[in-house]
Structures are given as C-alpha cells and as structure tokens.
Length: 314
Ligand SMILES: [Zn+2]
Image 1 (cartoon, rainbow, N blue to C red):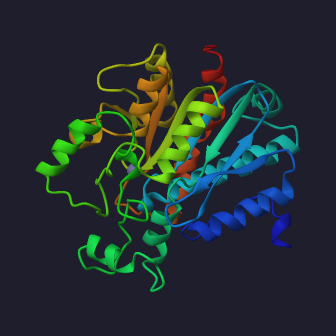
Image 2: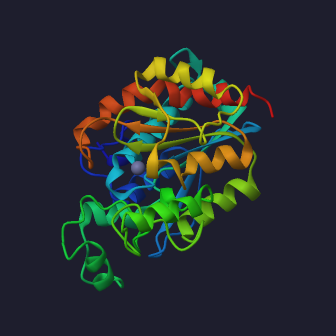
C-alpha cells in the first residue's frame, strides 16, 4: 500500500524533526480540512509547526516536546491528530464524543514539537556541521552522547524561559552552579529570550484567545495544574476528572520545577486553566514502544478537554 494511503501512521522509531516533517506532509495530503502553519523558526533555523483542528470560536492550545529527550510527547500529539482526522472523515465518534461536534465548537491548536533542535540533538546527536559544535560539546561536559539533552539548540531549557518567577529561579540556578548553557535547567538570559518561547508566547498573547492549555512532558504519570498555590476557577474539578480518566497523580511543583514553566506562565497571564501532563514512566528518553500505552491513557482527555474548557465561556 502506498504510504500516503495508510489510515494510521507508523510511529515505530524515535520521532525526530525529519520524521515530524514527513508525517505533517502526509497529513497535509490526506486531510484538507486541517490547517498547518508555523510559529516561527527555532534558534538553529527549523520551522516550528502548528496544526489547527476544527473551526469553532473557542480555542485551546496543546504543546509537546519543550524538552529534547521527551520526543515521545510529539508522538502522542501525532497519534491524536491522526485519529481525530480519520474520525472526522468518517463522521465518527470517540469516547462518546461526536467529532463533528468537536470540530464545529473548538479550534485545537497543536504545537507538536516546540523544540526541534533539542529533539534532533537528543535523537541524532551532534553533527559536525552544527554551527555551535564546539559550544554544544562544551555545554554537554565534553560528551558526544546527547540522548538526555533537554535544552534548545543553544543550551536554554525552554520550560524555564517563561516569565514567571524568573528572578527567583536565577538565584537557585546560580546556587546549583548551572552553567550559562547546559543540557537542562539553564533558564536563559531573560524571559522569552529564545525564539521558541518568544514565538509561542506572542502567538498566545496577540493572535488568539485561548480558554485553556495542555502541555505534554515525560515522565512520571503526574499532572501539574497550579501557579504557586494559585488554582484558576474550575481547574481543580477539571484536573480531578482528568486524573480519574488517566490514573495520573496530581502534583504541586516544588523547588526548581516551580519557576519559569509554561503552565505557571499561562495561568498567571490569563487566569485560565493550564495543565502539564508528565507522560509515561521510566527514564527519559522513554522507548517508542511506550507510545501506544501513553496515548491510550490520555486519549479521552485529549478529545474531551477542548469541549470542557470551551464551556467555561470567558
Ligand atoms: Zn519536560
């Protein structure tokens, strides 16, 4: 069978930027009812795709792969887009939800790989022609194994680069001796200093009116939903419902994890629900064979969350 005719895409090897591009091209050929665009370019010049499903007035945003070694979260989003589109084509239902209703009511904005340079380093390692070759080797402690790399293409951890608790984080960062450019946890020079976070924040701030956000990371089977101790109205009942569906544990961010993250920034900026799901269990990078189980646990949430969040009516 011709690759483009397959209903379910093959995701049986690590999902790097090249694979993402192939899958998106495949979606573009098969599903003329979805919209594919770009947030902007990563620090090393890769286009960061954004895919829109549905044409409802309410909007939600889903984001995967803030962290390089967490590329399995891109797979979760691609599985979701794939299943959504196949169901829409066949006027189908999933988990008691009519896809046509979902399509008409909510526009789901999906950034399947916010950090393409970090993912590429984690999967394919550092190529000799990388313009930052010497710097990246030095940031990686002289090692050529980048499989645990989480930062972007110049050593900034994107999920500490948002404008929430940045100065508090900087103090902890220096106490911990985190270098100016590192595989993980270096927050950058100032909030949104990186193109990846800058484009995303601007997109959310200026172009749209999102009623909620979901960000996928790995791992731990946990859900984060607070900004400090603050919880937006109705977030608590929603997150308890989600936890009941997927069996994940509800958590409050502690220590370094409490500052500079997307979920905290979104809650503080808009006072609307935002959730971080730590997908799967094990040691990052999780093996691709875990993808199906992770997706099955989150599937109902990914389909139902847009409707739940859209009913909050801001
Ligand atoms: Zn992460």
